[in-house]
Image (cartoon, rainbow over all chains, first blue to last red; front, side):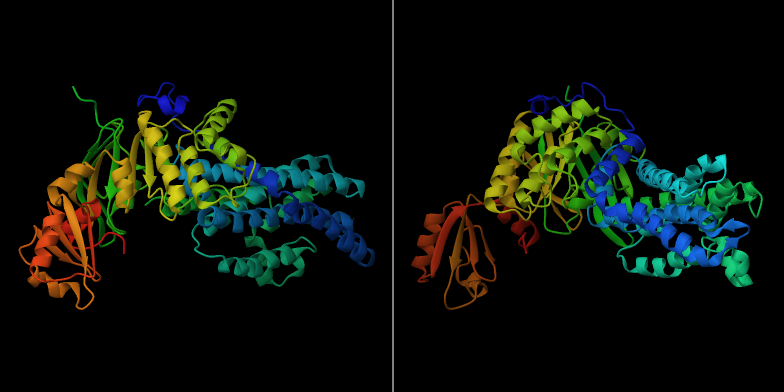
Length: 268
Length: 309
């Protein structure tokens, strides 16, 4: 066979940068093909149960919020919070696992792949996951009459940006860990409070000042108000560029941190 | 003119904080060679391998791999290396076949070509029947063979094997050695670390013995044995007293006496006459074994310690 008879000179020089982020993305998608069933509930069924139970069930007693039916009010929030939760779910255990248990990143490190390829490949994977979940959720929401503006077409992009602004720093955080005990703190003190208080189910104006400030700090709130604005055709609380800029800043700092954390883990 | 070495190290140092893992080593590996690092755990073998594999930056000294600088040209060098790490890092969620094709993509190898190579390599490591199996249920030996197949997927110029057979049963080790020997015969340059003497003797054309981050000896296995040990070694066990007690009593027999906790090693060019001399002095060991000298003896003589705990 050719492998055995090859001389020490390479005939066809391999690409110096290797397969780049797309090769990394390919690996994650191949793994996902094996385990996708596990994500069906959290990515697709759970958001729909929220809409049915809270949007229609609770909504029947709530009446309207800001002039909209409660269902129409929460659908954009549930959409954004689904993206937020998928992003965090995917950037916690799976990232730590690929450093610590499967050591997939160490395997990549022995190839021409660069650390930035690993980070970008992983974020692309999360983007695809979030994008697909958003599109399916929107299609179902449309059946319930929760879509009120053609701007709805940009919501998958908003979800993607929200996911990046969350997944990048959380991936960085996970890359620095030795065990998973911090994750329960993350879920308890960041994910659940964000989901409950960052404007998904009611306007943050209802919160006392301190709670409001926390909501403003959470990327989720910015994603929620952008989605809501796009789906209902209403103005955002702050100028759009502030919300988008906040998410972009989170994303950029997160990627920078991820690069530092991955490098620390994989060099030496 | 000789070919440029694939690996050249001059005064290579690796420190982790205050700890010096590799302490100024010099070495050259020529194309087609099978080169070994022999030494106990903590000798600096793996640290050296990681620097050669361009995943760890040298603290000081000069290192050239394939004529390039590992710090500047890491990805370019890694594109031409095959690495079989000490800890398995196969993808547990992927099949055996997918492990190879996915890895091929990391090198930018087109899909069809990756599949072709995967098929060929699985045959080479005798895992064709396992192509569709997941990695988890494979035995340790099979996983290691798959890792070696994976390391070959980019048709590397240089294959690095960090303790390739540690933890495998004897049968699995022999199968692996046989495959590595075939790679070597095919002209692939192998660099491996081991703390098994038999492995080094089986596979290496040339090796260095490392201890405490330094190279303490270098040469072919035969050369090292001839230089540092004697032709034969007599292992003597005594029922009554500790081996140390006999060092004085047997002084002068052979070239050297080394008491181990359970036995006394007597280095000599002629085992049989040494035994006769032991008996002539009136001692009756409970067991006597004459054997050829091995790298284990070389290591013991060089460092005063046995190699495997």
